[in-house]
Image (tube, rainbow over all chains, first blue to last red; front, top):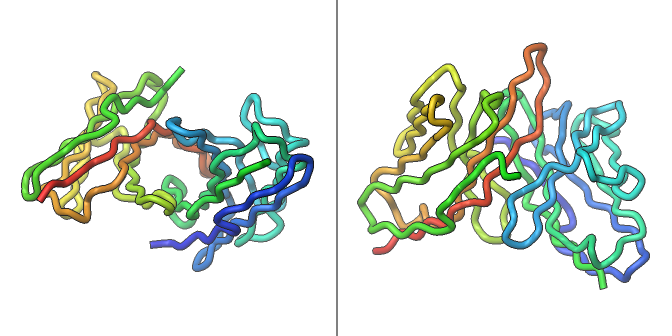
Length: 115
Length: 116
């Protein structure tokens, strides 16, 4: 199956700092990547859709100025959590779509803890 | 409001028996459904999917059934093996007519435990 790499897997940072998370499709080109967030005992919730070369589309309630998404190439999308606060602590996970547009392949996720 | 629901947080099944995981959805616009399997500290792994124009899709030990009128789908695993122990997520999306992909709406997951 298609491989999606996400880095880092775990990050701890102080309140007010910015954190960048990378999502790479390793063996396929992904015109579309997605960013999800999961709080404890909740389901994965879509945050935004990232299309290569264009602006990301954010879901309702997700602040685009806080969660900056860049999809500069067909294999890389980045999510930057700006001025992170403890309430941003969560599990962030990306996915990428390859040949079959209906099947998303997921990275391993990033556990963000903001102190 | 939860559009995709997995009402069983956990399920315990004996090795060799059939595991049946259930999923209900409320949005009748969904027309593509997927099952993912997740181990701790790993991302979800795609298992099997089904389009709304079908009522069954089979792949090896895994079969997904879709009942559109009931807005219900189920994943059958037979025979169940110890390596099947994981959290299983049901997901749904809308298929765009002009191409492109949409984000998935996930259920909360069911933790399947296969007992030896």
